[in-house]
Image 1 (cartoon, one colour):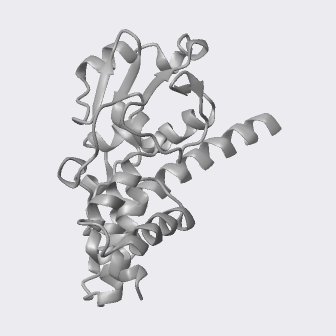
Image 2: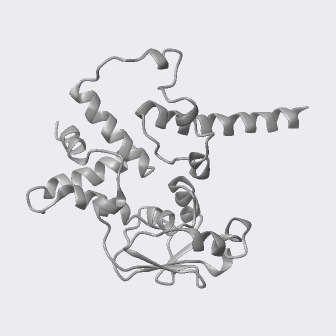
Image 3: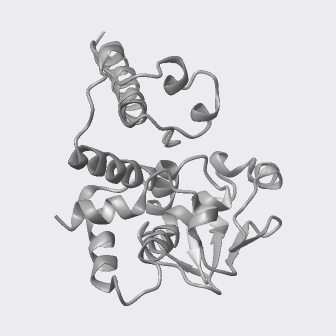
Length: 225
């Protein structure tokens, strides 16, 4: 009985976590692809329940303040890249300090976020979501220039080669990778070698290709208050 209750508790916890991710998208009114393949299906809650969560979700029509709009845009981009507030604020503050010295502050912010190792692993097609990418990087499954790196925030650069560690290739989660990668479209700044399960950084990310779901200038205004 105790074991059954424990398993039931684990199932309920997983369900709550799944719902929590989906509620973020519903609250912000945009699909952030936090659940990978589930987000591409017709079962995606933002399709089945296209309104904010909560009992009064369908009835909410109140206009948001300027601050509310800025907060919403910030939340969209922060969750899009699966970052905590402290991490995200650090990136924005770094760019704000250079604002006026760079041609496009928005492009610089996106470059920093796209160059995170967990995001690169996601963009390469090794995982269906950034959430999972962060987990497998943390577990030490990847090499950068033949050296193991288990820091999701690690900043790659042009010329770096990111590969799956030899000891990880036989794990069940990576068994279908070659087939998956053949169908996956990588951004122009990454070159994939499917046979070697390796990606090389051959360029720089740009705003147009990254297609972030938020207005970057509004985010800068939020943190400039």
